[in-house]
Length: 364
Image 1 (cartoon, rainbow, N blue to C red):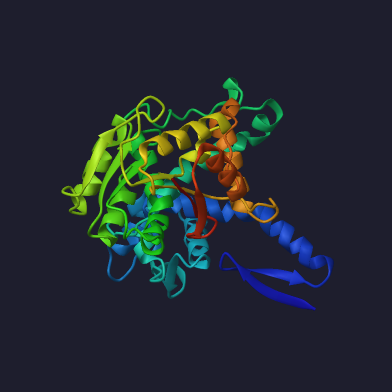
Image 2 (cartoon, rainbow, N blue to C red):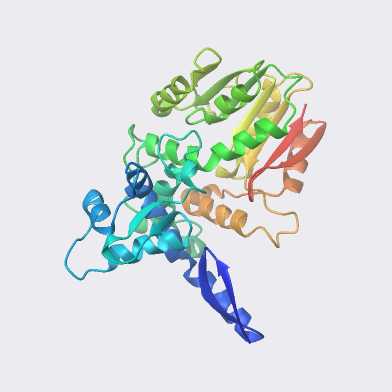
């Protein structure tokens, strides 16, 4: 018996018995191809360009707008666009050269620039950086870090300002795409009613502070990060009209003390570091918080049994490639509880957010 099932929106033949596992393994092995197309589409601004035309665009029109090959008989762009149709990120009306492509309405708010929920930055960052770095996983596993001779020619993320690949702005906009949905979920799920002030350590664009203050009118917030991202954060805060309630603070969180505040947030920060620096950052938070205050660490938490969290474990390997001998890793909630309790925090909680992401919370 042959069954047809859909994953990533595309159809694959699935057979009973061993055929099930064959199909599953083949799909896992080839999934990077669809991922690459989605990420490249984000980088090329396919969705924003499509959305600018109310009636949609033909393959030829998109090829011209994107600077892609238009040679007679060339099918690559059509295959690329139709793959995006199969992923339900584009939709197509008609057939052949006169067919029109438009952004799928289900994902328009996430993929078109200008939307408050736009996440295209993480697609571009994954295209330019993360997927390239993963080519060096074998090297990192064999040697404990990526060899100097094989480090990709990508600038350090905070070595320069700007939105080009390798610039701090490019990285910050990627983190915005990866994190905004989680911070909006945190604003809705966590009880901030007894707190009045928040600081986001490593706050990048300031999107966490903006999301929390938008949902909780009584809050004020400070987003803290290196000077290279100040201009990005200031622009984001002003665009959302929050400059009266959200401040920007230049900070190196390994050199500067954390600001005194009721709640400290670290979103995709703790996982960047090895155990000693993880504990250092948590101690910095403990010292800055008042009794009853809370530290909230938003990361791709690994399940305590380390059997199910595929994406979280992949993120942990990403940190290995990024930071090498730092021995960076993503962590379990059980580990988080152990570290914070040893430090003097009196209670912990976990709050699921979006997908594999959760908030690990400790109260002083």
